Length: 196
Image (tube, rainbow, N blue to C red; front, side):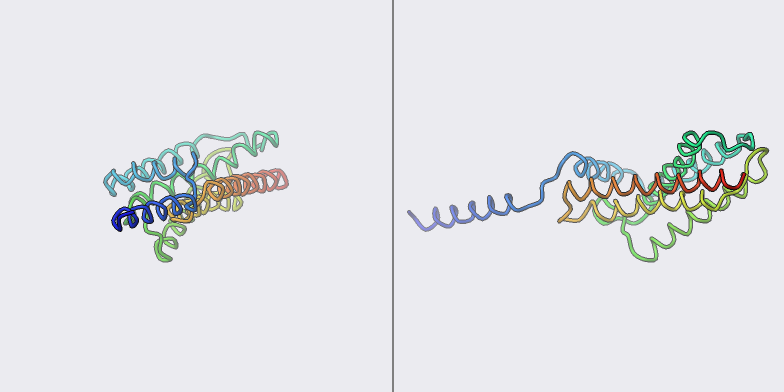
């Protein structure tokens, strides 16, 4: 076998060996990475516009008068868990405005702190606003649920771009995040019922 053909054969064998040991990208991890590439194609200031519009939506939802009665446990749990989704998406829109490394937001300690501080501040403002709406009240556990949603978005956004990220790891993180949001919603629901 000529030397050039032998070198080519060794290179091809190494390439196939590296492909065999590389983590597989399944549907969830692939979807997360695809979504990040699409977000990266958008101008960063659009993230602030989306975050502002999203917070106006949250404010509008908070402006609806309540009955003063927490209602059935199941319905209350769904509404309280919804805080995690609303504020998790708020965190995602803010992250869109962050400087990027490739398609992903650059997550440094200062940026993470600012994001969580912003979500905390907006969650507290939302609760204070609710205290002026008939039939609504403030709830510290709702703010905890808000932060849980934001933390979950941060955790997934920190994991998905890693070269060593796997489909199993993405699914495990998503499952743990859903469980954490559901638990925070349950805590908020229980505190609503115990407070009345």
